[in-house]
Length: 142
Length: 143
Image (cartoon, rainbow over all chains, first blue to last red; front, side, top):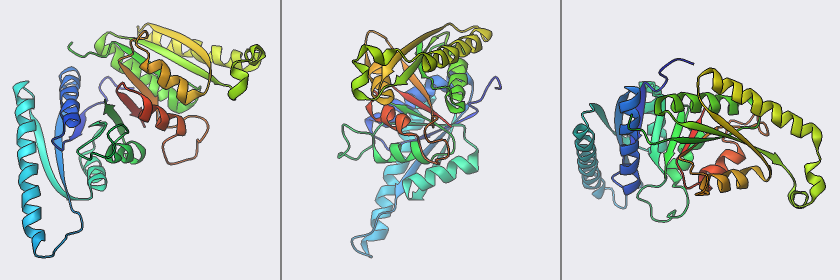
């Protein structure tokens, strides 16, 4: 085992409380391991109610994504850590997996649940899918 | 060193994946100057867990002891203190219970993605999945 095997850490954010927790935890790890931090927001492309609304809807989501990323960068920069931000569109889990592959990430840090209210007591669906299908290690912050 | 993971729980079952989890835990513990608690759960089907004769299975006990000793040597080589523990019961349930117990003060659980039961599966092992859902502490799944 090499001395540093967490070279790149991916943190998918969605603006929820748990993702903030994950962000703070990843800051700790980055400080200790001197790794690169990548923040990712995935805009979910769900089925549109109305074809005409779609454009507007995506714009709203994109705006929210940019805001979330900005806020997250702000938190990170307070701790003197530089990071790279990526905004993607599509299915959340598959986009995260694609980014992991293209950036060669070693670790994903996610909160145990996101914005979905249904799985309040359980693991979130995205975290669950990530834990099962991700090609690299996953840290689930509770 | 600001990292707060002082006590790391590593469930071991003697499989390669769990050893990888151990390596990762050692790596983390070195950075945070923490200690590792290795836990092996002897799988005992339901009712035998209460029965005293359930513990009298010497062969598996020997194997578990050997696994834990190996783990201890592995950690000691890197200068990490490792406390080992063996209990019997249902693996998933007891690992989660152990992790949630405030007396043990576990800060993080490091677990291999698959154990020995489903070596060929592409998916997450059942025990890892159970611990992932039920543990109240952060869980690191090592692939």
